[in-house]
Length: 111
Image (cartoon, rainbow, N blue to C red; front, side):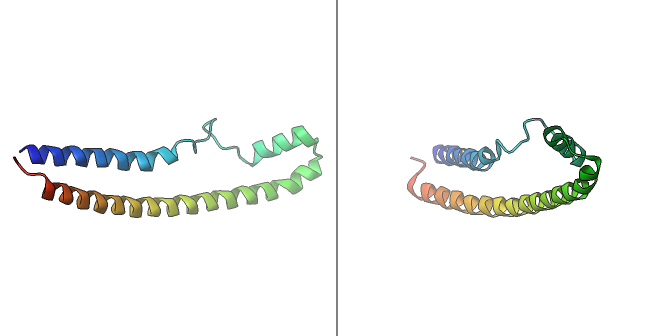
């Protein structure tokens, strides 16, 4: 029974390391303000800094909107790629953990 307890303890530690390895890099990607500015906010900031004319605002609006849509699409693609990589990595870590548990089980006995 003692052997099983050690294996379970090592498995728990391995799971904790796995969760930490995946979660820690995600910290810091959150937007500090909790929101993303829309085209109107971006144009308002530009106007404040540059004192834009009405004509400039009208010409910049589709440019800013298009750029924001491209960024959104790029970020979504990146999120999907990262999710796939995380899942692959989890699988590799799980295989390694199972292999290590088998090695421990072959060394540790009930004695």
